[in-house]
Length: 233
Image 1 (tube, rainbow, N blue to C red):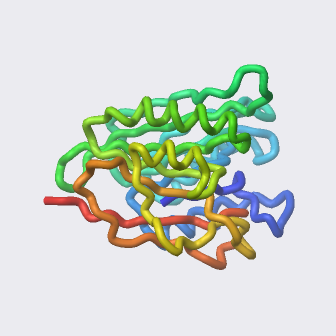
Image 2 (spheres, helix red, strand yellow; image 1 turned 45 degrees about the vertical axis):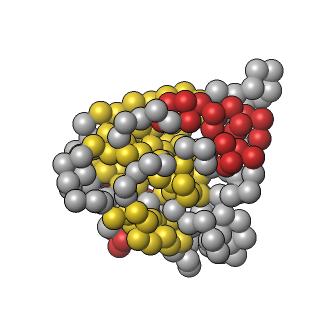
């Protein structure tokens, strides 16, 4: 699953933080791995709560946080929840174009063992709104993940659509979980664009069983996306 949680703030309730609503979505659909974006850690606006740690407690999952920026006395970034114990976890800073204002972005990476005992790398990111930054960021992601010997799933809010040049660069190494007639993911009330994606590294023997965007969920300004992959014996 990938889900931009808008720091736990339902868009129709300004100033409200409702992490149990996010946890309810995750618990209802029982994903093995979750890529989360727009997470606060110990910031003033969310009451100095470690949001990812709280979501891990509410879902019974392991977790890893990757900072984007310092924010309101704490940190703001992306994170991963995993039903499997996390064997390794790494934060990679993503580049931006020199001389052009940018909010720092990162790539969160964990490695787990799948049910067949083989390793899986799961990555989460939230790319920049600016295309010039995004182009550099997808190239860096390809550099980091492209030569991986293990299966890799990349998920997140990419702030781009399937037809943009940056997606074409990613698709040199990755295949989207949905490639035709894909449901939009934002905004949550009247979704018009698909900018949240789950992708599998090319060459994997894993196969897509299903891809879903869950509608009518008001916990964030994005809708959650979930893909199910079949793991080979």
